[in-house]
Every structure is written in structure tokens, then in C-alpha cells.
Length: 112
Length: 110
Image (cartoon, rainbow over all chains, first blue to last red; front, side):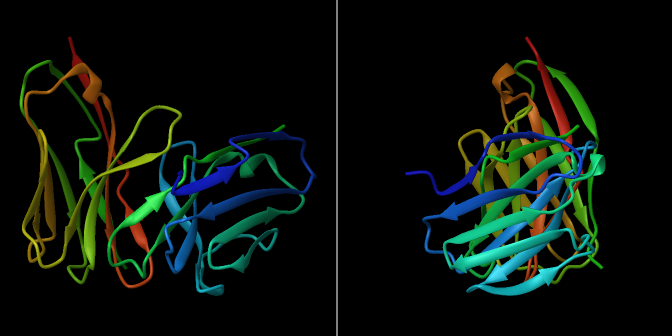
């Protein structure tokens, strides 16, 4: 009955590889987000999708590409991984932001 | 541009004390304010949500207040326990996203 679920929980990969993180929500929310938490623990928005449409695309390298096949899913694909991409990535959802945000448990990405 | 600030960055108190965490934001045009808790290496747990029209919310030993006009919120924790040790994050939302402060790392000494 997990509300927002992300997979995988941990991801260790080499520089230059391409990887994907999946996110699914069963709350019926219309908006989904990806946030990045850096080494200083600061959370910053990367993308948001509302009903499968891209709403926010913050200053994120083109190597990061979100994909929303339907309202309940928002996946994050990262090409040519770099050391600086190491972070914890959180998926979240909301109903147009009105009633608060629900976050997944995070994906800890380590690039070696 | 909305900015959220949390003071102090870290706080250590003995068990049983009441404490207050502070949050300030620069743009009062918010939809709501949300307090989260994050344990080391874990995800975000929502503690309290205050809609922009509300002044406070309570859950158990936690009470959060919101003063939109002054751009401030406080999280009051009564009778603190070692299990309250975590990082507490304040976040405000507008029409499109939620913006976080940098958090207060709270440590409760037994």
C-alpha cells in the first residue's frame, strides 16, 4: 500500500553508464516531481509533470530526461553518468500542490 | 524568487525539554507550508501541513504555526524524546512546486 514507490533504492554504477530510476504513485495525484538531495542534504526540484505534461524543468543537464508514460508514473533516465551525479533522488506527488506533497523513500545513486 | 531559511542549523537539547524550530520564507504568496522529518539515510516523512488560510496545526506533541504576513513558521515539539532526533525540514509550496529550507538537525540527549 506504498503511496509513492521508487526503484531501485540503491544504485551503484560506473561513470559513463546510462541508468534509470522508476517512480510510481497510487494516490491518484495529478502531478509528480523529481527532487535531488545533494551531499549537503539540500533538496532541490529537477522536474515536475502534470497529467503527463512537463511543467518544470529546472537547470538540469540534458543528460537527465524524465518520462511520464501515464499519470501514475514518472521515470528518470540519466545518460553518461558523472561523479557529480552522485546524490539521493526523491520522487514526489501532489494533487496540484493543494494538499501537500508525498515523497518516496529515495534512490541513493553512487557513481564510481 | 522564494527562499526558505531554517534556524538553527543544528540543535541539541536534553530529553524532556520543549523546543521550537524556526522557518522563514521570503514570498508570502504560498499555497501551504509543510514540515517534514528525515532520519539519516531515509526518506521524508510529512509531519504537519498548514494551508495558507490556517494559522496552526497540531499532531500529538507537535504544533506548527504559520504567520504568512511575516513569512514565518515555527514547529513546537513538547516533551522531547530521543526518538525525535532527526533532521526537520520546512517547505513552502506555490502553484507549481515545493521549496525546501536546508533543515534543522535535532539531537535529543538521553
